[in-house]
Length: 129
Image (cartoon, rainbow, N blue to C red; front, side, top):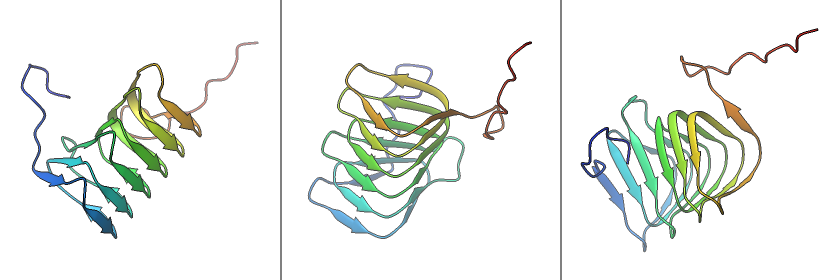
């Protein structure tokens, strides 16, 4: 997913399709979600990654450096490094990103906001004149 070579993404934690988590989830490494989370999803590690399959959904904010989304998120996403939105991705919230990749069919109901190199909001550029 985010490796520079052809190795598959690292998955340390798996939340299965039949699982429903009510509450915040803090993790390290890689988290793959096939089920549902009602709460915030956070990882402080700059190498952490979150992958959400077509059946996965999150109702709450997401703060993870690397995100691969094919499912649904109802809440803001802060992907400091990179976010990849698959064709089945649905976001109801703002997306803050370092680098974004979107496949035709992905839907965002909210703003796209590019983050600067430090993960901070970029200052708006003034028009010349």
